Image 1 (cartoon, rainbow, N blue to C red):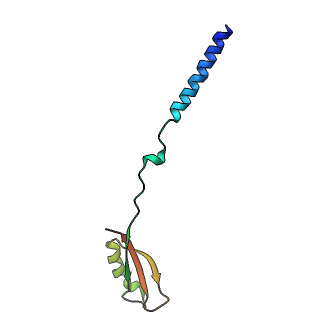
Image 2: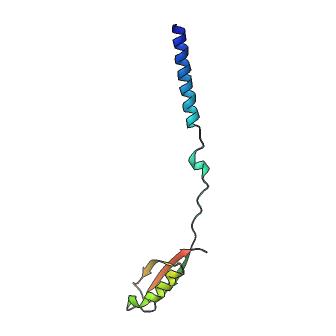
Image 3: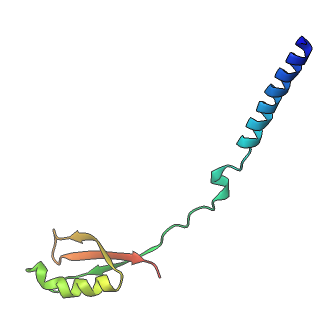
Length: 90
């Protein structure tokens, strides 16, 4: 009777080991995904139409926004002042 209990115990342990090996055997997630494509940008430097009143430039900037440009930097410590816009490279 003790041989039968040992055999059942060994079979159970072996079954659990095989189950754990089967469950953990999957491709690594990083190997499944291709490398991400780097985003490419294009830039535009713009001299605002009116440097004294920034609100007067709204139509100019609205037009750039409609074309997909996004303001990413402003430089106002020198004359002329300028803005840098960027958008995804087309």
